[in-house]
Image (cartoon, rainbow, N blue to C red):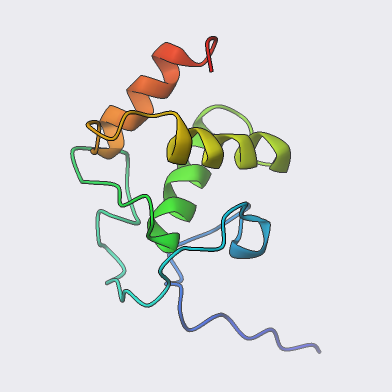
Length: 110
């Protein structure tokens, strides 16, 4: 029987299709520790701020959006989503739900 070790840096609550190795950018911070029920990495997108330079938050958010939009196994779409969040969403929009809604409203023009 093969034993697979889970990464100690990501909580077990994160079931990720899109992973650190798939990410386009390499300048993310990975040192922040999260509790298993921290709204920054769990639950539905809400008014919680999304830090676009925090790797674990971005992974959570990209996977959550991809799951909702049926992209869970389309790495190209998730990489595009990562780029849109970092490059196209206005910096004045900082909440998870605000970013989610902006992408939904502007997806045809980005």
